[in-house]
Length: 312
Length: 278
Image (cartoon, rainbow over all chains, first blue to last red; front, side, top):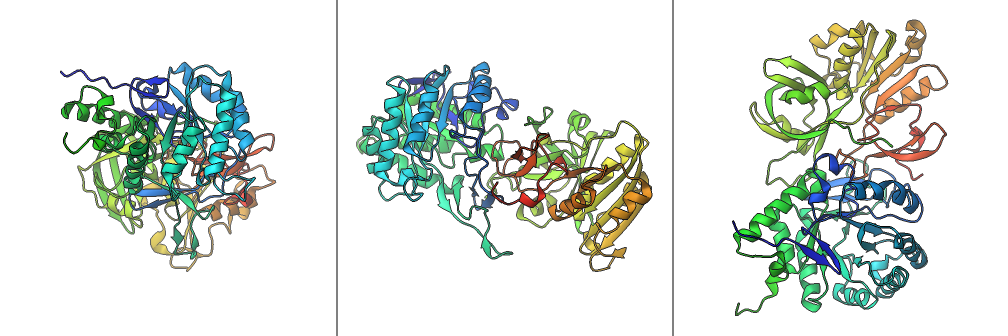
């Protein structure tokens, strides 16, 4: 039996396994806890929470697509106060490691959210989901605007102080992901979450109109995995010191290992959990077996392994 | 906000029988002891397409009835119309095929504590769970009358054995090809009066449920309906299957039909706001 060090770090946060839920794909972990012990995975990334309670977009919110799905939820959620009062204590009680994902409509809202998290105990890291429309700038998505991305991360960093790792979640719908990544790292992000969903649309041929209530939706699932692997590879090549939480269509241990070899320090599982409530656990187990089978003695050795020089 | 059905479990289950009944397939699936925890109204989420499938999401089906003492142990029956990719795959699975399922999910129809007059209204294959419900209500001493409707005769699901538990069954088709011509909602107002109906149980398209709500609004008749919204996960984590529902104080929120439903009190559902932004 080969010993494998399966642990990973994102900034100064340590996790016993590199497998996480993806924000927006596990609610707050309560439902999945009926299917497996949620403390046995790397951690729970909670659904992006906003300052106020929010009802989200009109239905239909979902369309299955070849090897994927579109969703258009619109960040429905209870708001930060109810979330901190109800959901976080449950996760702490379950002894799960927690990454809290926050989302805002203004730079100020992100900072306010960060202030509310400052005194909460039991959190390992904060994911700053900047793939939201900026109401102060014509609804342009923060993550598609290098300057707005920087300002959000800078505001959160100043508010939160130096302890808690900040992970910026970026959109792949940009021309130059590397430069946006560099910008948020300079502004104080300790890590990156790559990638959010890819914007898409389905036309309903009965109504001959966009199928989703919100017209456009985020494409997720195996259909976007090669985009995600490419994004992680490109960013890791430029900034190998920055930890990346890789996601986008991971549904097997092999998919997870591809992402890790491309440069991810950990992986998030999203859409796969919709199809299989125990997906995170099976992917975690498959990844562990695969690393051992390939002769790695630690997960860390495999991170970015696809970047090694030709001679190796 | 409710939690996930606490009996829900993910299991691998055998198809014991797959029989074509008109335009539908009747599937009998061995679910062992879980059959004891299934209630009328609950649903099952089934993985479809096999391992290399491009279909990544489960399909949700209402459980039409369960048996806890069949030869093969606990079983559940599903009535499936093969019209989408997923349901076609499922209907093509032979006896002995193994399915990855999560069951039981969602809320159940409330059963009256005393024998009362009840009316069951089904639209299309939405009638499937009503036959299992009728048996439970009948066993409670309720008088059960049933209305089934569809656009045309071939879409009516009304098995012979299902009729045993009902006092009367009336069928409506829009094209007049079976039973009376018209919509299944047309006789409801009259029947409430004539039969002194206390509870209406309904299952079918949202437009039908909404029309029943309009009839029962302002009356003492309780309307328990099983709603239909497209779901990605069935277990409460994706937030796609929501619909606007008021609480006792009148506050409206988007509830998940997989966890807070599918069975809901029709008078709390905000039918005019379904499909709109709150």
